[in-house]
Image (cartoon, rainbow, N blue to C red):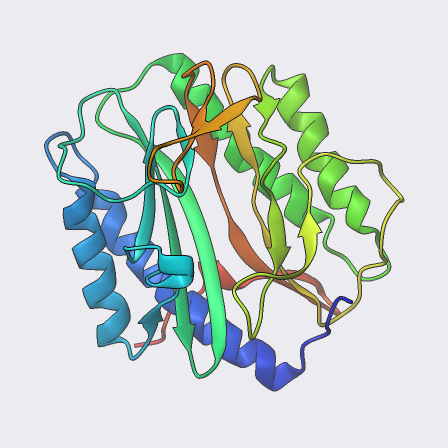
Length: 252
């Protein structure tokens, strides 16, 4: 069952998402050659706690960190570590916040220093897939419209979709119903309603869609070791259309 959130519930989710956005704003300029993702994790955790929130990922099924940091062929769920990033890497960072019994979640991918045109195109395409998926979040639309919009643009652009992972509902739990595939058929699936709050989360690979898991049982890699990219926003369906909660800032 897909729950509809009240105005007050969306306000609480929105507050969590503002913290997610703040963390992302602090992390992006720090992503340069020589920094390690463990340092980024420390900045994220301090920022979340300073705003009165809790890192949603830390301790979630024993995950050890406040962010997921996945670089190059690492698709999702990478552990922050003390290995320095290198010029030409790409890095995906996923951030989750819990506060007042609700959650916010968001992710982005960016290049480390100068990257190849192919990696740049992968990142831009994944971000465009996110935008196109969000545009389908309208009342009385279908869940399958979101999935189809993402798939159509990804495959038209020459990239593979990592099919084992996707978007999800969010609210009192980090992951709620429904699971939102990044592939699907338009005009299919549940009808979308005002009050639905979803995380739209395209994950694309430059090579094969096949994946494998690392020895930590968390980190997911592309099987052919080609780069992957990942974007995510938390979005509410309102009477005026989709509202991207993870793009909002605290007022001064």
